[in-house]
Image 1 (cartoon, one colour):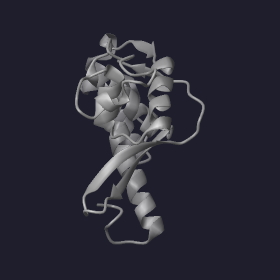
Image 2: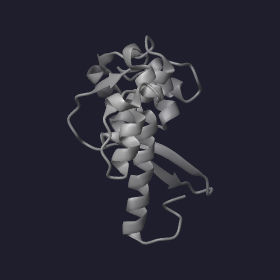
Image 3: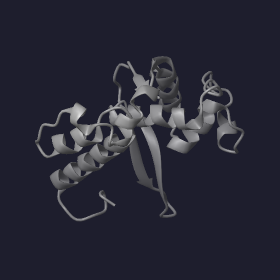
Image 4: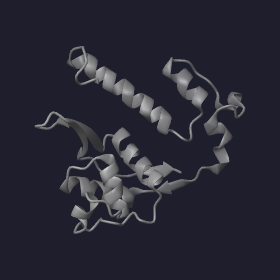
Amino acid sequence: MIRMGNGNKDQKLRQKEDLEAVIRYCDNKTDCRRVLVLEHFGEKFKKELCKKTCDNCMNQGENENKDYSKESQDLINIIKKSKLSICQLIEVYRGMSSKKSLDYTELPEYGKGKHLKKMTVERIIRFLINGKYLEEKTEVNKAGYTWSYLEYKRRPIRVIIVE
């Protein structure tokens, strides 16, 4: 939509950055929503004043920090070798037996994430996209169909995700 829409290159870049900010907001499971929203508009708000009225503050004690650096590196290694969508990458990493993922059984990372929930792997991938480690690219094929795939952006990895 953004790529094919109206506007010059700078406007499209800003629109993409705005979209990425919304995705980061949605993916954020730890920071107070009121702090985030008011911060976006240049205002200060103390988290304590929220009094657990947002979802993140209500669930504050339930979240735990986990280091997913190794898993992140595995996912990036897969992407370095192939063009996969987010769904395909999840299937390959978790060792699912779909038609597309079976093409990647020779990869050393194939099935390494089978112990992880699908949602956890997806959150790691989203973190990698939001952190500019991976980029989601879109292409139109010869038949005119649009498809998305992930591309590595060549940055060192250190990831901690709250689950």
